[in-house]
Image (cartoon, rainbow, N blue to C red):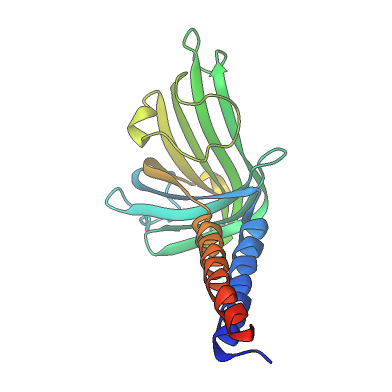
Length: 218
């Protein structure tokens, strides 16, 4: 028959296992995807989506986040962006393109590029519907080491060749801006490390009571 101390360690072991495997499940579910948060400002409104005046202006900010698969063509799995009280979400196709040591975009310069394009949906603005969002960041060739989806994004100031985002509407209406932040959100790998540490702690605790039990049984 188990004593109370043994029972406590067994319960703790079950709890730790649940936390650990739950953390592993989360990581496996998120594995293969990277979430980016971003922000920027409005710098221009072209052919404003309003005959008498646009609801968008250069005093406004833009913010949002997107989750991108890091396999294949880097499809954008989810996206949400807010500008001037309006909110737009992903729909249809879209992806991220990473270019490393590209000499064709800005000859004779060789550059690196982070480019995202995604169809969006949301409430119409004065009869004009949102169609797609683009982010175009270009900088010197030293920014990326390869064409892999970056888990750490260089400082936004590093993209000194081009820094622009565009929200396109029907009828040729476009809201244009500059990015002020683009950050990759790290996956919670610490959950696994924490769980592994707890398992080790339980193992040490279990080892400490076994000799004592043997002495009592002798």
